[in-house]
Structures are given as structure tokens and as C-alpha cells.
Image 1 (spheres, rainbow, N blue to C red):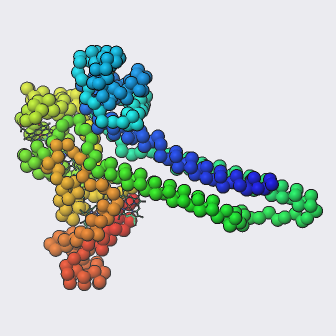
Image 2: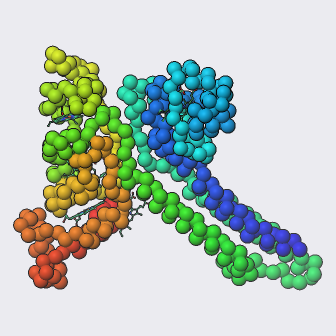
Length: 422
Ligand code: HEC
Ligand code: HEC
Ligand code: HEC
Ligand code: HEC
Ligand code: HEC
Ligand code: HEC
């Protein structure tokens, strides 16, 4: 009897652990990220998450100030709430000069996520808001997500292992007592491996179940990653100055490398400094769309007086938000692609000369890099860089090149792990 209970609790503990891990891994972190994204796409055009008044009031504190049910109704359709005569709604409407907040296409769950984001935002960084107050809501958006589910899983596994070994000891001592009572020989203690093999033999269904759970977990992790990749494609953060590539590289035909000077000779393409903007903007003081307002931000960064054309001492760099972010363990080199590979910027960055706001055009996943390395034929002819490489090619590749003139990046070693990973 006693063995039975000990034996049958084990697998259930196992399953329990797995399910705990399963549910933990999919909750809070994700919601937090979504909240931020939702806030930025639906609310940030009119509200700050802190205390600043934009079109509407700052939203710090609304999660405490109002009932959740009221907030759902207000956010989904403030107008009908006001018209229904809800006193609180009318009061808010009057307080903010009778500007109507348009109905927002969000559901209760999304509202919860937004409110959680606003709450976290204020609890984590009450000072940050003040610092960026006049810079117009600039933030360095971190795209990384720290994840501690791995530790939780490891912890659970450890606890399970300890439990199993304790239970096994108990089971063994009991079997000694049992054997002595019956006057039989004391049984030998089985090794952990034998015991495990035996357990697997006798509990096939549970093993199969665990297998299914593990596969589901892996599938889920894969799915999450796939979704995240989708999110960064088209990533289009708000910038401190409304700089338009369309106006500069498109309408005015300024060459990409006039501003991104280092693309052809260095690892990074570089973002131009405010001084470079001044080559033109010392004279061009008004733009077609924003008048003096946006260009004035360049002057503010350099403490430049457009009337006297003199520079003061109080400079503060423009904090452009980085759009593209490869992880640290990946090596990518612009000059290798631009100067040696002769690939134009648009192939990887899309039609930048039509963007009014900088954005990420491609997924930047490993598959994206590798696909192109598989498909792209290197242009060795008349490219000095390849003379020596050509000499060192193995005979079969040399022959292939002579016959049909094609060699892909991957055949030159472009899909070896060490080429892209430190
Ligand atoms: C087009 C501008 C606009 C957008 C977009 C917008 N709001 Fe508003 N919101 C307002 C205005 C204006 C007010 C002030 C109330 C009024 O005059 O009706 C307001 C008021 C509020 C209030 C009441 C604040 C208080 O302190 O009383 C909340 C809560 C709120 N908005 C939440 C949101 C959320 C959440 C979103 C995004 C899903 C959002 N709003 C999107 C304009 C907007
Ligand atoms: C007048 C200067 C100027 C010219 C010309 C210009 N850029 Fe830019 N570029 C910038 C500035 C400033 C930023 C940072 C702000 C932003 O992301 O919009 C930027 C950002 C970018 C980014 C995003 C960088 C990141 O944060 O990951 C890419 C990609 C880019 N430029 C490509 C190009 C290409 C391709 C061309 C030519 C078609 C071009 N740029 C022409 C000034 C310029
Ligand atoms: C083979 C693809 C490819 C080509 C071609 C390419 N880029 Fe990039 N670019 C990238 C990747 C990948 C990143 C992200 C690098 C990182 O995060 O380390 C990037 C980042 C940038 C950035 C952000 C700043 C930096 O250096 O990290 C700018 C600006 C930029 N590219 C401009 C250009 C311009 C201008 C050209 C053409 C002269 C160009 N790129 C050609 C793939 C490319
Ligand atoms: C090679 C010249 C040149 C450089 C360098 C240059 N710009 Fe411009 N910029 C222009 C021209 C031309 C206009 C359009 C003026 C017009 O049409 O009236 C303009 C307009 C603007 C506007 C006004 C947009 C509007 O619609 O009101 C902003 C903002 C701006 N530039 C930002 C920058 C920034 C930031 C930099 C540096 C990263 C920069 N520019 C570098 C030539 C340049
Ligand atoms: C549009 C096609 C294209 C894309 C996308 C691309 N590459 Fe390349 N890559 C090339 C070409 C062409 C070369 C050949 C230049 C040469 O021979 O070194 C090259 C060469 C390289 C090399 C040098 C290989 C060697 O044999 O020395 C590295 C490293 C590299 N790429 C990394 C990357 C990474 C990392 C990415 C993704 C973030 C990427 N590439 C995306 C086309 C591409
Ligand atoms: C042409 C460049 C390139 C080559 C070759 C390459 N990788 Fe990658 N790898 C990348 C890029 C880019 C990323 C980042 C992808 C992302 O952030 O989505 C990456 C990410 C990874 C990751 C992390 C995955 C993650 O989710 O962050 C691993 C592990 C990895 N690579 C292993 C390898 C191995 C093993 C090889 C050799 C078989 C290899 N890579 C060859 C470009 C490359």
C-alpha cells in the first residue's frame, strides 16, 4: 500500500511541475510588452503615460482614480458614456474643456494591459518622465525582454529530483522493514538508472503524456519567437525630431552616404551628428511641413542662435532611437556588404527614400541572412577584393566558376557559424 502511494504521487508531481511552468511562461512578461505596444499605437498620440498634458491629460494614476468597469466604458466610447448622463464622465469632459476623446477600438483585456503598462511606467520611472518632459516623450525603447522562466523551470526540476530521491529512500527503508518482518533477505538498493528504467517501463502512459507536454512547450516557445520576429519587422519608433527620409533622400535626392558616411568603409553605417545637419540647416531654417518647429530642435541640440548664427556652450546630443538591433552575439559588417558585396541599401532596408519615419523593413533573423548568402552570387569579376580569394579557392569551385561564372556567398563560407557569431 505505502509503496503504491509513493509511486503514484511521483508522476503527478511531475505533471504538476510541467503545467506550472507552462502557465508561468506565458503570462506577465508578454502582457507587459503588449501593454506598451498598445499604449503607443492607440493612446500615445494624445496621452503621456506620466503626468504631462498632451491633447488629453497624463494618465498617471487613472488606474486608482476610477473603477475598472467605468474605465472600460470610457475608453471604448466616452461619448456615449457622457450622453448617458454619467456624472463622472460629464465631469471629466467639462474639466478638460469639452474636447471629446474618440472611441478606442480596444477590448477589456487590452485595456487591462494598457493600464498595467501605465502603472509599471509610473512605478519604475517617476524621474524619467520629468527628465524627458520637454524633449517630447523621448524614450530609449528596449527591445530586449529579460526572461526568468528558464530559472523557474530549472528550480522546479531540481525540487522534483530531490523529492524523487527522498521518496526513493523512504521506499527503500520501508521495503527493508517489510522484508525483515517476513523474515526474507534484505533487498539490494537499486541504482537510480535501473529504478528509472523500471519506472518508465511500468508507467508508459504517463511518460507519453509528459512527452506530449514537452513537445507542446517547445512548439509554444517556437511560436512565441516567430511572433516576436513579426513584431520587429516594421518597427517604427517615434524619433525626437521628425526627420523624414522621404524629404531628404527622396525629394531632395541627398545620397545615403552623405549622411551615413561610414557605411562603405566600416562595420556600422552610423547616424549623422547634428553638426552635419548644419551644413544645410544653418541656412534652411524652415521646413515645408513643420515650419521652424522641428528644425529648431537641431539648433537647441547645438545651442545655435539662428539669428546671430553663433553657437553657445549648452549642447545636448539628439537622442535618436535605434531602429535596428541585432543581438550582441551576431557580427554584421556594412562595408563587407556595401563595398565588397556591392549590395545597395534598399535591398536590406527597403525603399528608405519613401519613409517619412525610419523603420525596420526586414526581419533581421538568421534565416534572412542565410537565405541571401545561399542565393546571392558574388561578383568576383573586376573586384580586387576577390583576386586573392579566387587564387585560394578549392579546385572544384574554381572549375565551377570558370564554367558558369557563379559562386554563391555560401560556397565561399558565408554560412559557417563563426562568420557571423563571435
Ligand atoms: C485623439 C486623442 C485621444 C486618444 C487617441 C485617446 N484619448 Fe483618452 N482622452 C482624450 C481627451 C481629450 C481626454 C479628456 C477628456 C475629455 O475631454 O473628454 C481624455 C481622457 C481620458 C481619460 C480620463 C483621464 C482623467 O484623468 O480623467 C482616460 C482614462 C483616457 N483618456 C484613456 C485613454 C486610453 C487608455 C487611450 C488609448 C486606448 C486613449 N485615452 C486615447 C483624448 C484621447
Ligand atoms: C540628411 C541625412 C540623411 C540621409 C540623406 C539619409 N539618412 Fe538615413 N538616417 C538619418 C537620420 C538622422 C537617421 C536617424 C533617425 C531615423 O531613424 O529616422 C537615419 C536613420 C536611418 C536608418 C535606421 C537606423 C537605425 O536606427 O537602425 C536607416 C536604415 C537609414 N537611415 C538608411 C538610409 C538610406 C538607405 C538612405 C538613402 C536612401 C538614407 N538613410 C539617407 C539621416 C539621413
Ligand atoms: C546586407 C544587408 C544590409 C545592407 C546592404 C545595408 N544595411 Fe544597414 N543595416 C543592416 C543590418 C543587419 C543592420 C543592423 C546592425 C546592428 O544592429 O548591428 C543595419 C543598420 C543600419 C543603420 C543603423 C546604424 C548602424 O550602423 O547600426 C543604418 C543607419 C544603416 N544600416 C544604413 C545603411 C545604409 C545607408 C546602407 C547603404 C549604403 C546600408 N545600411 C546597407 C543591413 C544592411
Ligand atoms: C544636404 C542638405 C541637408 C542636410 C545635410 C540635412 N537637411 Fe534637413 N532639410 C534639407 C532640405 C532641402 C529641407 C527642405 C526645405 C524645404 O523644402 O523648404 C530640409 C528639411 C528638414 C526638416 C523640416 C521638415 C518639415 O517638413 O518641416 C527637418 C526637421 C530636417 N530637415 C531635419 C534634418 C536633420 C535632423 C538633419 C541632420 C540629421 C538634416 N535635416 C540634414 C536639407 C538638408
Ligand atoms: C541581400 C543579401 C545579404 C543579406 C540579407 C546578408 N548578407 Fe552577408 N553577405 C552578402 C554578400 C553578397 C556577401 C559577400 C561579400 C563577401 O564576399 O565577403 C556577404 C558576406 C558576409 C560576411 C562575410 C563572409 C565571408 O565569407 O567572409 C558576413 C560575416 C556576413 N555577410 C554576415 C551577414 C549577416 C550577419 C547578415 C544578417 C544580419 C547578412 N550577412 C545578411 C549578402 C547578404
Ligand atoms: C549569415 C550569418 C549567420 C550565420 C552563418 C549563422 N548565424 Fe546564427 N544568427 C544570425 C543572426 C542574425 C541571429 C539573430 C537572429 C535574431 O535575433 O532573430 C542568429 C542567432 C543565432 C542563435 C540564437 C537564436 C536566438 O533565438 O537568439 C543561435 C543559437 C545561432 N544563431 C546559432 C548558429 C549556428 C549553430 C550557426 C552555424 C550552423 C549559425 N548560427 C550561423 C546569423 C547567422
